Length: 259
Ligand SMILES: [Zn+2]
Ligand SMILES: [Zn+2]
Image (cartoon, rainbow, N blue to C red; front, side, top):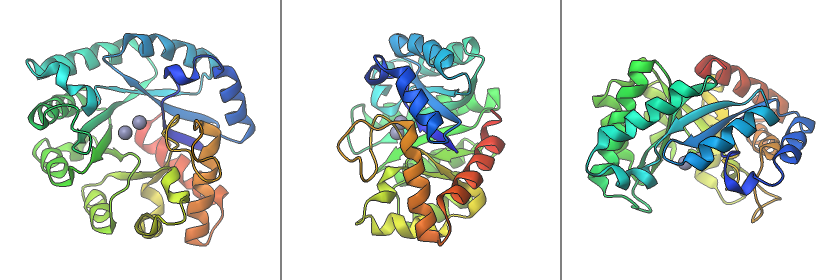
């Protein structure tokens, strides 16, 4: 199976990257989409080491809503920077993660929106799918996606934690839903319902490593090997096995990101 969203170029993995990759491969995880912050040069440098350690990885590059504040005076600068990094990285396959985060509000909302919009335009110019991060910003996210005609490129709502109505909204605009370790939590009742309703051809699975470790690894650093737990949990909810979920998610990954 494939981990469709992780931060393996993060400093959390700098010391034992090769071990992490070996554990992933031993668990049957053959590839991953690694998210790189366009505004973080150190992370971008480490992305090259990730490629060497695991040649099957592909990259999503973008300015995260948490970092949008840096571009308050000049939102197009965020997409220029993302564009430069995309150009230089031959294994880049998506623009992301980009979006809106009104839970933390680390950047003013109008700036988050402008930076999001500029990068959607970039994705359309480059014909790359989007990896969208959205938290407590549902209406603005869908409004901007519609205004920017995002149907042309498509994409995924990563680490989806919305309710069934939001899931249907995302599916209606042609997007994929990616579920993370939260689906393994016993009390995530609404997310369990979402896991049952997503059509098998729109489902992706991810770890969001190093964050959000699934049961029984909660509270520790997460890593791509644990995406198997996400697949198993979804399989259980849908009355099938983890391998079938992993296989479907892999096919969807290959269609969306053309790795
Ligand atoms: Zn995110
Ligand atoms: Zn992430």
